[in-house]
Amino acid sequence: MQGKRILLIIGGGIAAYKSLLLIRLLRAAGAAVTPVLTRAGAEFVTPLSVSALAGEKVYSALFDLTDEAEMGHIQLSRVADLIVVAPATADFLAKMAQGRADDLASTLLLATDTAVLVAPAMNLRMWHHPATQRNLAQLRADGVGFVGPEAGEMACGEFGIGRMAEPEAIFASIAAALQSGPLAGRHILVTSGPTHEPIDPVRYIANRSSGAQGTAIAAALRDLGADVTFVTGPASVPAPEGVRVVRVETAAQMLAAVQAALPAEVAVMAAAVADWRVANASGSKMKKDGSGQAPALEFAENPDILALVSKGDARPRLVVGFAAETDQVETYAAAKRLRKGCDWIVANDVSPATGIMGGSENAVVLISEAGSEVWPRMAKDAVARRLADRIAAALAD
Ligand code: CTP
Image 1 (spheres, rainbow, N blue to C red):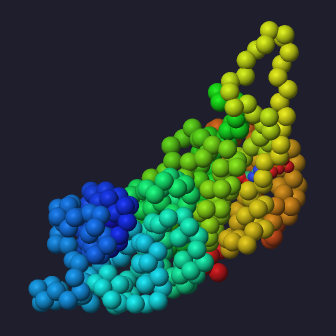
Image 2 (image 1 turned 90 degrees about the horizontal axis):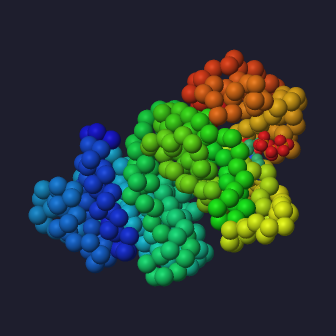
Image 3 (image 1 turned 90 degrees about the vertical axis):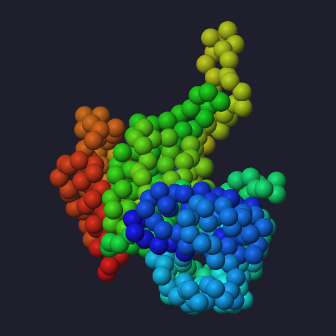
């Protein structure tokens, strides 16, 4: 980020205040910020606060004689390493999709060939409207990158997708967009960690996954320049820096987060997803009734996230699954690859004697259409780097 210049267009919307925090994050990381405030944006944050945080002049008018004399709008659009629009309203997206140039911000976007990253923010009905979805598809086809929006409560009181991504998530996307490396600009989804399936508000069913292998894979992909979305269950190792982290607890939440993160060019599904959830989970804490009778838990099968992604409409170009087996590792894993419809399976033996589950090393077999490849036992970080290199090579083909 050091020495990079971001042209930040702040559009109209209550989320504009988050862009002030974004400016602080960028400056703290050593980037310079050229702020452009749209007329609507200036209704939500003041030019003074934007300029004070950016430490630079705020640009807003298209026909400003002083600005034109100092730095014309064409020049302004070309000095940046990346243009970020945050928040981008439905109206602004429509304008961008049409290629209109009726104010400074839209003119800059039309006059540039610099990469553009957009953080939309709008009411959920506006987001789901076919016109907005059409504009998004057009902008994606034009090569515009997106971060968010996220699901949550909105300023208007409604609940759903449309909230602008948090400043940290936008920062991570900016960092990824500025990366160089064989996976630069590639969006890769990684799932990791266990899931917790509630029995009642205080008890849950879990598994021994630490999240170490998925975390190492996300970091290795990031190091090759990928823009990583990391969907993680409650893992015992910290999430990597510089990736977009989405925290979930249950398999159902993981599925929703994965679907919201698509499209992606690659999906690496390293999470140890619980196969079953408790169908009769209690909304209040289960109590002993003194009869000595244990509660009878009923189970329902969880959706298979890997199979749904592999067979879904938004299928990534490369889908990598994992297989945790205790017997006949290669045979079961090869059958799993076909059954789930993924391209590769990273199979490992999780028998307690191997010490792999929860340990720092892994011994894997990579199974693809071409056959099986046995990798020597090595640190999980080394497995991750080797897998990331293989992914980069596959995308380069
Ligand atoms: N997986 C998933 N959703 C599930 C279960 C598993 O996406 N509900 C994914 C895991 O992330 C992993 C792969 O499927 O990439 C294989 O997981 P594994 O637990 O080994 O397989 P199972 O589906 O449990 O198959 P089996 O019960 O036959 O071992």
